[in-house]
Length: 457
Ligand SMILES: *Cc1c(COP(=O)(O)O)cnc(C)c1O
Figure 1: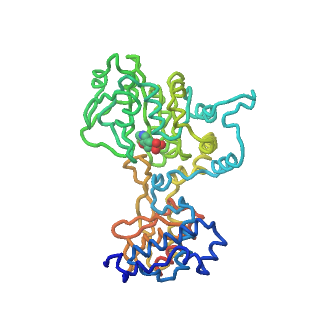
Figure 2 (figure 1 turned 30 degrees about the horizontal axis):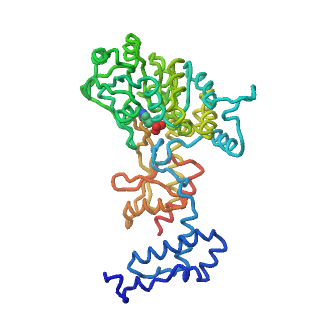
Figure 3 (figure 1 turned 90 degrees about the vertical axis):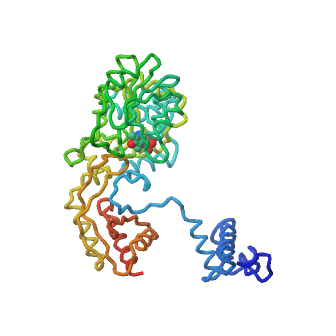
């Protein structure tokens, strides 16, 4: 590379911003877009050329700036098609919402609402009252609050119930959930002192009993949501932990992770405790997510005994991690669907995808395979629940496998990602596979078109 101060260096001959702005194609863009946006696109385009050794864009300055304006003007958060078969995909936004939840959000977004206003009294109300009654009705808990997410709910509960005291946890449950969220770190931030008991694979009731002292404020149980421990193992049930806590005047908290409101074992989904089962163990409070198996918006739900939940509600951290009106609207609408479990299985997308008849999935696979035509076949495969729920459970599915002769799988998935809307596919055994379980019927046509274009390109 030559010295950029050398007058022969092509980077010295790059046009000035004003010169590019004066080009007729670029001037036309200024008429259709905010001037600041076009100026930024011009600067970025010149910078890009400089980084490329000073070569002018091969498509010409006008076209290069137009492409950049379009990219900058487009929203960065995009809807996409999930063809991975992972139902609760954290990177892809976890739970898609039911129609009624989407409608509720839109209704509240458009204007003012009684978010913190008591319509009967004409006085200030509390947003914590909004989903409370429904949660109590659906779970049988005495009381409930909703905050921003389950990590926040856990922080609030530890602060409210264990601050300036000790909280006892099994070494087998000191988990990392993902996104740098680790139980020991969150405990430290809550002001509780962590007391570890047992070993990674085995913890016994006597370990908890031996650790409890007059400094103990809380016994915590964490559901191992994203992995399984097998082999020589022992863990203490939530019921036994609640018993030890009660006997010593300490509180007990169960971090459930997923928040399953319905028993899904008839569909082969077993091993994940339901919220009702967790409460029946006698713990003072349970914590779970709104956007995992519950199938609602991102939220952290805390429910349980009146005194424990009231302490959480009054904790200053509850204000810091409170939920917004869109979340509360969507969560209320989602919860209302659970009053009719049959309706929940049909209308809540997560439940529908998890319990869908494999024959129906096969039909969508066949439609896709037939319409794509060449270079594809149908094979048996497995979908995943994802989102740290039902670890180890595999759901039987039918995949469309793409077998082009001349196209590397990495290139093919990249082309599908570049589609509008982007399509996220999986590579298994060095082949691109599409799992129709997470492809909605209304998306099939778009997937067909994108796959054909990607194979033809
Ligand atoms: C997912 C999960 C969390 C965190 O939930 P968010 O709603 O993502 O904050 C906490 N604990 C467990 C056990 C989990 O599985």
